[in-house]
Each structure stands twice: as C-alpha cells, then as structure tokens.
Amino acid sequence: MEQFDNVSVAKRANVYFDGKCVSHSITLADGTRKSVGVILPSKLLFNTGAPEIMELLEGQCRITLAGSNEAVSYQGGQSFNVPGDSSFQIEVLETLHYVCHFG
Image 1: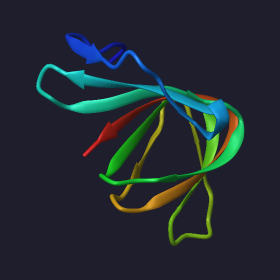
Image 2: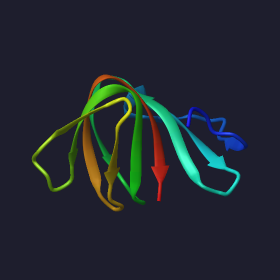
Image 3: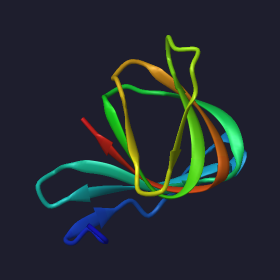
C-alpha cells in the first residue's frame, strides 16, 4: 500500500530524541491508529505500550529486542514486530522512513 486514504492526521508532530525521530499520528476511518515518520542515523532506545509492527519503507537499521543480545539487520521493504510493554534498541545506519502499526 503506497498511501492511506480517508485518514485524520495530527497537525503537531511527535518529536523524540532531540529531533532524531519525527512522526505524525494518523487515524484511519475504522479507528485504527498508526504513526508515520523518519529516524535519522543514531542509536536509540524505544519503549512500547501496545504491540507494534514497524514497517520500513526506506533506509537501514539494526534492531535489538529487549531480552536479546543479538542485533538483527533490516532495510526498506522489511518489517519487524515488537511485543507490548517491551522495548527495542535501534541503530539507524541510513535515514529510516517507517510506518508503525499499533496493536
């Protein structure tokens, strides 16, 4: 899917880690919530509330899920799952464009 139709977009951006991660929250017509954003090259730790699927559109990164010592490489066209009430460390090697699917 190249675009989301019939959505509402939060006007104010979510800015994290001194601007290294910027996203916008969107809500689809059926109430499904997502965020669409960019992460600049950096090494960051994210905490999750709900389970997430991170769909990578462009870029490259290495992900280490909570409880794991092994980093796994991902790039645009791939996705990874993160459990709810957890965390993951991301090392962005090339600016990452993503969609985060919640729930």
